[in-house]
Each structure stands twice: as structure tokens, then as C-alpha cells.
Length: 257
Image (cartoon, rainbow, N blue to C red; front, side, top):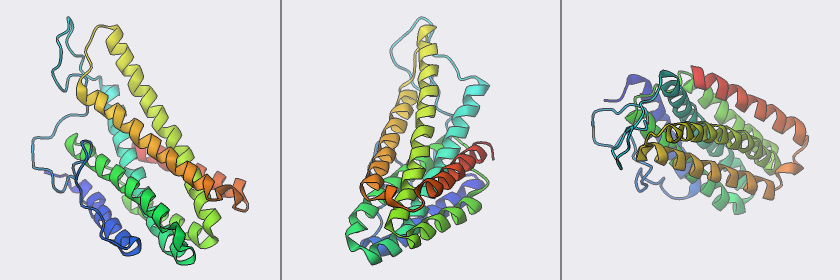
């Protein structure tokens, strides 16, 4: 059963899809079709699993078997899933806020905005599923992040295409580095276990691959933004600097609250 704290996240996800569908010209996609994505709202109820562990699945035999996670490693994984879910919710809300003003002025941007939104919505479904399965508490600041992300999206779009794309450039620069740091930490854990002769479960390796895939898609958005005149925004250094600082602050808080 979902914890009460997860209900705002799922309600926000439904609202985002309904709002986006009106501006992307066809209904939002249902939660389906990815080995990494099973929506918490449709997944059959099962006994919740602990955070991804190197001993989560049995595989080939080893002299030492699989090493349990330490308390510090569990805390890291819980904070990583929590902040990633919050970040992907914010991304969907930013694009939902940006799309109406942008495509009204320039309809040629509709396919690009839809493509980036769809990828962010898929990322959100992935982390919704992961925090549900591993009983991770979502951030308590969903209402605040939702208002700020929606305002950032709408506000930058009202400043023009260049400002909206500069927003994407700034956000994805920070998010790309954030995912890279998480991946490095997980790979260090794997290296330590393997050096000690322990096995690493398939679920743990799947988590690393999922983060790599999502990171690559976020960096793709950064490339799209630069290609669509993000660096022509005025003043570019100030706009991107403020947004990047805000992202770093939101990441720090969401990891802890």
C-alpha cells in the first residue's frame, strides 16, 4: 500500500499529464511499456522491497555471496531516489508551463517540446515506481517545488524562446552533473564489492543502467536547447547562473527533506 506521502506525487503526475495533453494535441501516454517503468498506480500490490541491494537477486555462485548494504549506503540510495523523483516532477512542470506560450508564438517548437516533455514524464514514472517499490519517502516539499517549477517554466517562456531554452540549458547542466555523481558513487560501491569477492545483483546493475540512460536523455535536452538559441538569451550569464544556483539548492534540500 502506498504511503500517504506519495499521494501528492501521483496526483501531481496526473495533473501534469492532463495539462500537457491539451497543448501537445493528443492524449498523454498511459503508464506502460518499459522494462524500467511500472506506474505505482497500476502496479499489482506486492510486499515492498528494500532499497536496491547487491543481494537483491540470486545469480552465479561466489565464495562470499552478496554483501548487504550498510546503513550509509541505504541512506544514499534513498536520498538519490527521493531527489531524482522530485527533479523529474519539476522538469515536467517546467515544460508544461513553457509549452503554451512558446508554441503559440512559434508552432514549429511543438514537436521538440513534446519530445522533451515525454522523456521527462517517462523519467518521473520510473522514479515513482522505484520509490514505491523500495519504500522511499518522497520529499516533503512537493507543493513548494511544484509552484516554483511551474512559475519558472511560464516565466522564462514569457521572456521568449531564448530565455526558455536558456532555462533548459541551465537545468540540464546541473542535472547531468548530478546524475554523473550518483553513477560514480554506485560504481565505486560495485568496485568495492567485486574487489572483496562479493557478487553484485542484477537489480543493482539495472539501477546504474537506468541512471545512465536518463542522464543521457537529459544531456540530449541540453543539446537541443543550445541548438535553439539558448545562449542568445540576455543576459545569458545571469539567467543561467540564477537557475543553476536554484537547482543546486533544490537538490541539496530534497536529498534531506
